[in-house]
Image (cartoon, rainbow, N blue to C red):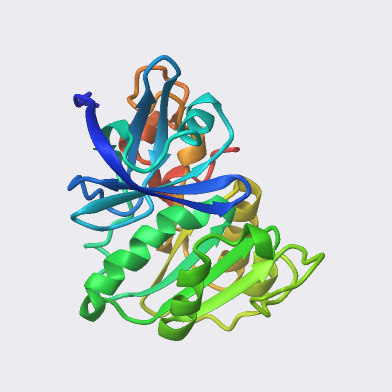
Length: 263
């Protein structure tokens, strides 16, 4: 993988999503393809690959979950600060190949963020795709990402939302249970339809099993293996699976390419 030079970009907005997720809106024309990632570096702290959550020629949205030293350092950054980015890198979802097809998006937790880029891409190219269905699951109502957009997606597309638990109020009036249960009970047609997924490995494994039982073949299923990545540039070798580097050959793969991988 070619290592691009890191450049500084201005943070346009800092938008808290949940207790442990923040959306950073950055002024840049990088415009990655849905499913690609950028390398974010914080001088004196480190560098981390972060999947993009937008498709836009003027801004770049990064949804950051606060789980490591780099993301926690990002949490201290404010509007107007400069951030170092390299990229975009990797192979995203094959939007050109998918033209003319019906799409099913399946996401869990912060895995919904890369799928948001697909939604923005489809919004800009409505006539190129058929019916759009979404199955998104979160831990609780307070953990739902993109709360305002969720309402818009409900109106524009066939959005199916669930939360694992709802100890307090459920402002979304959505089912309480795993997103896999929504997928299991849904009436899905395999005709000219492909499925794009992103989320925790255990969720993806269960969803793949459900979808295959419903008649979807391996070559109609697309998965993101971004959780395998460490350095993001193919140098550390941590992400090699089946002779391929997730960071350069992926992170998005057609399922028949990686179905033997044990996450």
